[in-house]
Amino acid sequence: MDVVLLKDIEKLGSEGTVVRVKPGFARNYLLPRGLAAPATAQQLKLFEAAKRRRLEKAQRATEQAATLKRTLESRSLSLKLRVGEDDKPFGAITSHDVLEALQQGGVELDKHAVHLPQPIKTLGVFEIPVRLHPEVTATVKLWVVKE
Image (tube, rainbow, N blue to C red; front, side, top):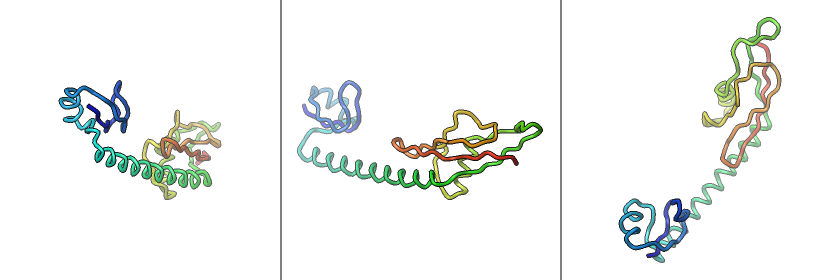
């Protein structure tokens, strides 16, 4: 029996693939769980239309992320860090602080978009990676100055 896979299935195939399986496997496992649909001409046409819509949506999301990347890379942030004698810091700049500064600048991001390997505890200029989309990562320049 030929079926169109609606989701990726390990050892069988990826989404959108037409595969030949035993009728019992299709009838008892794939079809009831919504993992596949019978490979009819109408089903293939519906799947191709849905696939085209998903690709267009993904392309729009990538374009929006690229536009946001250009916006983020054109500006720089400045955050203040409390320091004591000999420029010894009290506290640190975390990814949450960077995210708040970006949001105050009018950029809405997911809380996991800003990636700092470790909190910043020194003064200086840093380049912070911001993951906007799986394919698009922006680099924001961060100036850490004395409070």
